[in-house]
Length: 479
Image (cartoon, rainbow, N blue to C red; front, side, top):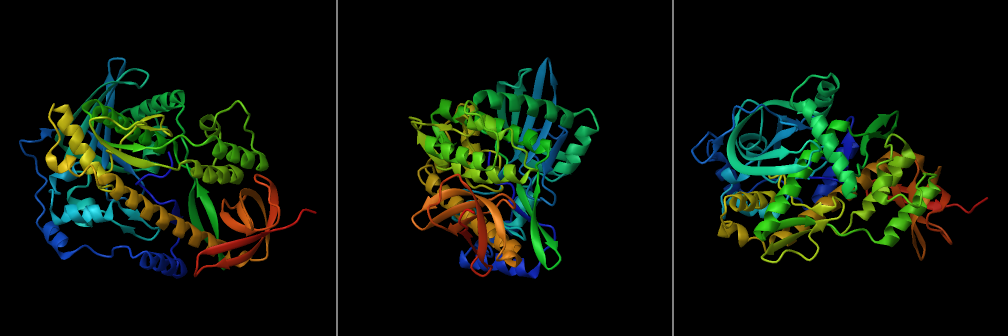
């Protein structure tokens, strides 16, 4: 579904001083926060003990497991599943940040200022102080934690028959990386993880039937080679999508509850315009990829093999179709177009409260509605401002990612100035345009006359400036 709040697109196989300086320069230029205000730090020192209490059901007997990228400490979600008749019982525990963050507190105000956790290859700028997001509220193993517990009763085909949502105290049994989870699933060990494969696979089929777009942008890894660098690509493991399907199912259920309750905050995205899809088709043809005219965009991207550079290039370019994503708040009449068109259904962010400020509000709204109550005033009064606050957080996150990718691509190509590259023209302006390299999957501005959109060209790298994070190519005349 494109990038989530979970991970950066750039990873370093080994950190270098040159890249560290560049990342720090970007953060300084963007004036990103370096530390939390003293009031927030004082509140963190007085966090309540996350021990069981009468307001929370006791879910500590459930064998939850968390599955996250290696090194993660801000663990939002824990999963458990078991057979139920011919279908499945799936439990999904979400960290209950509302247990710790009180309306009007310094933590609350600072979360509105930050909006979401920002990720750099060498560090992160957290939404909440690490003592909270990587400690007291994180669903770390062998620790009692307050959670918002989603219980799904699924049909044999993975459709949701019923859902329950309540607050509960949970205790995760294991913290696993994606690689560890994939290895256990592949070994055939019965249990929750084997059912994650079954449920995830059934949800993938339902996703395809809805016409949703399942796009995985390749994760780029910077590798030191001699005196320079190269970009390699990490293809996501199957378990990453199976795991994501549980989060998507929860977000869709949350949206449904809020729409029925006539109050909430949705994540929306319009359908891509026809001209944008046609533009991508031209690029695919230039990259010699088979995209029959009767195959939809959603079905085409499912055929991409991200281990192939040309496929990785078109996947990277496909992210341009994911434009117009926004948050839509409502009280009473829902938005005119409540759908997230990449998901092909109404959808809400409810599963990452440690990393996204809005999820604390949507969780509270859902909990109130399933109890048959109206959400608290502090929650509904914030709805008017949340879309703009989260829009600004999205903008900041997008700018940071663009700058990081630009810097990494410049550093990788810095010792190749003067070389010719195979490329595709993906945008045309009055004095040049944009090209997509076949390998590595880099987009950059170019100079050239009479450029034809979607055409294959040879382009010479004429500028690679790490200080400015700028690449510039010259498209060579044919012949």
